[in-house]
Length: 266
Image 1 (cartoon, helix red, strand yellow):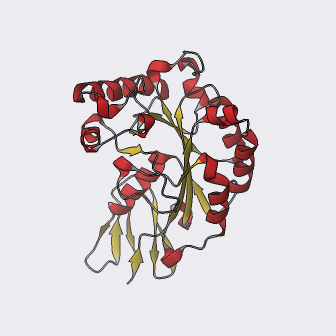
Image 2 (cartoon, one colour):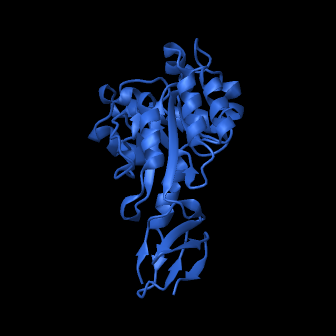
């Protein structure tokens, strides 16, 4: 029996996630566009900057990002490699506490301010409750992350139209899962006066039944649930101890494994 971890929710092989930093006032327009086309984003916010000129207020956070992910970006956006360990911990935990009070759920992810990190910063994150952190190092492919604490995106949004078209046209090789991960800042669309590019991207990428639209943390949870499956020695029986439903390929057939359930595959 040949079993492969090669499917996203619904048995599809492609996923799209978006990631936006800083919590600027232009997130309001960006979120409206995403919502209109059914796209999901993760918004990495600096809680210490709420209410300052050009930044959203804390009073609008919960409603504005409803249906998306609220994620950390440190409280005041420092260069983490220039910050003492104690300062790194304070920046992240202060941000998490403030955001969690607004979001109403644990904040478990972040992105690195200025894309600045090193091995010491990464080593601190698990103890601070951070399960993933996005870099700014684009790889321009559709591969899954090999290190969630240094999660490299596909591209900055300035390249999203060309790579989005390629993503739609490309056939998965060897039945591998493919992820298009776009990151950026909403204020850049305003500064460059190119909101039409986001409108075009969202219109082209939205509404595809063969694409899973997910936040960063939803992808993290799904991949964790896949890896957490428990198989019998024969691989004919599988138990899913997580609360997340998953899909796997059994031969050429997509099989659904609900959360908390044991399934006979043979």
